[in-house]
Length: 292
Image (cartoon, rainbow, N blue to C red; front, top):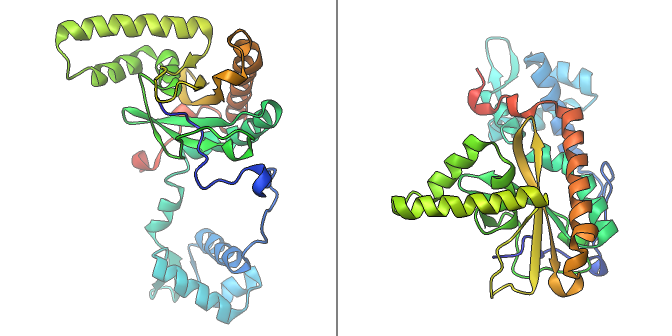
């Protein structure tokens, strides 16, 4: 089982990475991009607007407004409206918000809490979400940890049955979802073996629930590392999982619960509270696929 915290192409603090708080800037903003977004924002509000109107609202010079509109036309987000003698947005602007459901919201909420946890315990923390029949690592604080976990990369796919994230997801998701995921995973084996596998999985899930967190299935390839994970929930559903990887030689088994698992659980609860406060019930929020 692979460890979950990517280090590929990510500098460690000693190589110059800077921990940037939310809202702070590590680089100066690109002014042309900011102005183009300003034009797009106001055009979206006005529905149809002329260059003169956009110039008056934004204070951007008319020639610059024209260049930005032409660029947005090339990108497919704006078109000329000959009937009204101006410019208007296209339906393609809806695509800009398609991804802002689920993963981005969870990551946005988890970001400061995950960073704070890594600063405190030094180990990298990752956020993963269900993607089909696997978990997908969506965010990590590994670059801010002094210890690099081996064989990892962002967006890596994690097995539901063997990864800590997958096992945490299965343990804490609703019964109907768990049954569907397990049935899909076991579809290719014989009915008799399927029944025994379900019983074994059920026992593992009971153990995870009693313990409050999941562990990965150990393998010879990565026997020196361990991963634990807890679920991030909202309205009875699992939005994602928070996981932490560490070297087994660095943390005695008797201290794992207090030093790592408990802080991870507290962090997950804080993320859940943040999501509930800022987004409410995410499980009922519409996605781009069911918009009218």
